[in-house]
Image 1 (tube, each protein chain N blue to C red):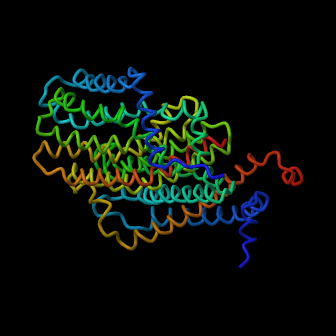
Image 2 (spheres, chains in turn yellow, green):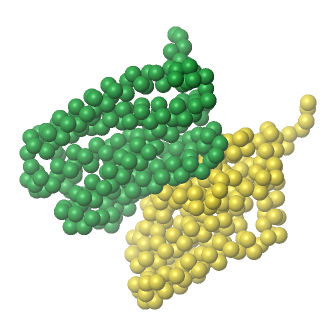
Amino acid sequence: MSAVRTPTLAAARLVFQRDMTLAWRRWDEVAQPLIFYVVVTTMFPLATTPDLSALREIGGGVVWVAALLASLLALESLFRADVEDGTTEQWVLSGQPLGYLLLAKVAAHWVLTGLPLVIMSPIVGTGLGLPTSVWGVLMFSLLLGTGTLSILGGIGAALTVGVRRGSVLLSLLVLPLAMPLLIFGSRAVTMQMDGDSPAGPLQLLAAIFFMALSLGPLAMSAAIRISVEN
Amino acid sequence: MSWTWFHKLASPPHAYRILGTIAPWFGWASLALILLATWWGLVKAPADYQQGDGFRILYVHAPSAWMSMFTYVVMAVAAGVGLIWRIKLAHAAAAACAPIGASFTFLALATGSIWGKPMWGTWWVWDARLTSELLLLFLYLGYMALRASFDDPQRADRASAVLALVGVINVPIIHYSVEWWSTLHQPASVTKFDKPSIDLAMLIPLFIMIVGFQLYFGWAVSRRLRGEILRRERNANWLKEAA
């Protein structure tokens, strides 16, 4: 019974690498949230007004709402394949701290969906009339916001594995929890645009991110255990 | 110290019997207090110098808003107890709380909106407290939707318990973020109505009403929990013997 256990960090890295490899082989799925993001933000000028100075007023909020929706879109299937083929069950049995493995999986998911949204946001924002001076704040706030949302969404996805029509349910569960992110994130952008210091909301965003990072894995592993055991 | 009384409490037959005994007490006491507070608040309390009689909806609005948050905390505590000690009765209690809490939240929103029409001139203002009540309603609806989407009752219990705990950690964050958001967007004059030091003559019926609402909650949760127990234990022997 003296089987050598893989160090936790190495195991987490393996999970991360595996998910990245899988994603590269199905890159079209990775691109979908990004396309969704651009399409949604295109709808606002069409629905309201093409006037850039008017769009600028709501631009920060629109980018944020679209980014939240786009990153939720891909979350629903986060754990499904792994639960169905028994991979998650093996993780539970492996003796590794489940939270770390799930966090690695969420991290891979964030690199594949959250990060592209962050990189894309200046382009989308420019289309909505946001000045170049807010690019930094926009990207930084989205960096923290999509990270937190990936963890929150990970909890939601873990709870709704195997549920009929899970994607609507997931949005219903996660979006109310994500409202503070939306408030602080879009507010930081607006404050920067108005010439105020956005440090306050950014710090609050960072605080929420670290809280999600520390408590999220606990909730995720509890949720996955429930899904696997029953 | 012996814990047998506690374990007894967690057994469905005992809980069913005890709840049946205490429910009427809660019910009649709450009815008496709510009627007393209604009379006191609508007839005896003086009209507000600024809002006239319009403020009297406060006697429904404030207790419902308070109960909407109180119920969420009770639900989360019950869910946590159920999750940690694997007590099925606690899960049933959490399940019983959710619709009651959602109703209180809805009542608080509706009365706030009705109050807002004469005071603010519109049915809806993106006021901090109204907005966080609305988000609380979404949390309740999400909880109930998650619970309803599982066929396996045990999984429904435990999954929704995790959600309730995540939610209860988030409720203060949501509340304060909305408050912060609201103070940035609105002149403070709008929220001035509720805040000023309220006269004792108006406060006493409010307290009575809050106690009445608490007792009503006790009654409603006892009744609902009895229903939950019946539904969950429908194949159990003790029920067949009792029937």
